Image 1 (tube, rainbow, N blue to C red):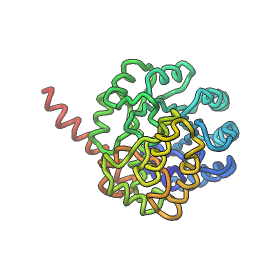
Image 2 (cartoon, helix red, strand yellow; image 1 turned 90 degrees about the vertical axis):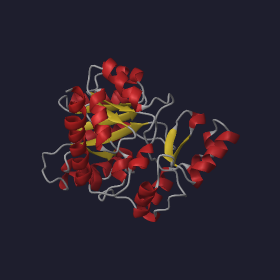
Image 3 (tube, rainbow, N blue to C red; image 1 turned 45 degrees about the horizontal axis):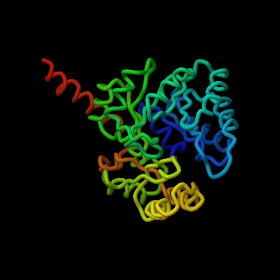
Image 4 (cartoon, rainbow, N blue to C red; image 1 turned 45 degrees about the vertical axis):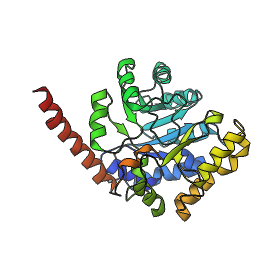
Length: 308
């Protein structure tokens, strides 16, 4: 999902567009995607970010090679997620560009505090509602964001299950500086994914996801379909044996569904509970502007009237 057209559209619309490094098959392909993103910006001074996730993969990856591209391309924001190995990447990034920003995704304040102590600039606090990997502690955002405001000395954003202006207002009230959205941006005009996937997001609801890979402690929230059901069945029979279902969770299956077929059933693909709030497929600009306008209305009218 995090390809140049969507990343540029988000930055053009007033947000921070993120290119996902590991959707690219090689570091050099990532370089091309970063450069393509910049050509699509309406103003070359607009910032972009790159996400580099360090988690167990089906094949060994040279994460530092991807980091070297991000550094050499002078990407203003590095978003990371995953294992403590991220700290090595933070160091080389900051050594090269101390003025740039590191955002690290965390599912607990314990991990956020550790990242803060190691010098990251901002935290993305990911609640249990999020698509992808919500961690193993199942902490929802109503608690997680309040804990972040209490514990952290650096800024943080609310991530997971966010899709409208009321939630933006709530995140600000809880202490976040803003919100991070993934699934909601998948259902936009500029998202470079098959219309069949976008239709599934609009047609789905808050019950349309489920958790897989809990038995191998790499929990992932995904769209609930035939393939996720098969993974769940295998995990129940062979708990902890990743090899029994590895072929079903391959990234190539995901890519084919999103980029070629639009088949929602024959692959594992990340999606969040925010599907319950997705009713249309707007442009990124319209989505963000409507969210900000709704949040402003709620803050100025509803919240202010309650304290007067």
